[in-house]
Image (cartoon, rainbow, N blue to C red; front, top):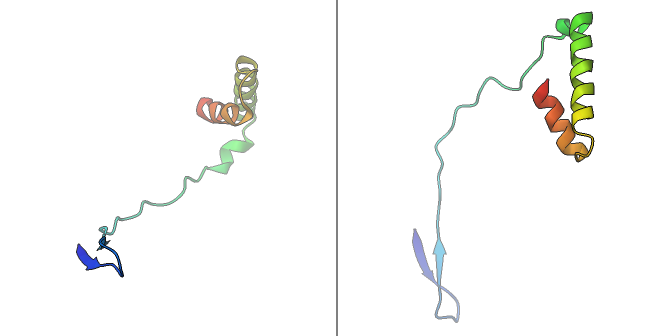
Length: 73
């Protein structure tokens, strides 16, 4: 930390340098196996889950409803 005198003032300027350590990144974004989307049973279960969630949360904000749907799936 450094202190410097300000121009025509009784205040001091404070300079602060922050260095953060390099954090290793993870493997990346989640990738779904799209072959499960072809399965008719899976499609039926997903559609039923979405329908049930919407029916249970009719008065919900659309953004919140979307988060709830994702959580239930």
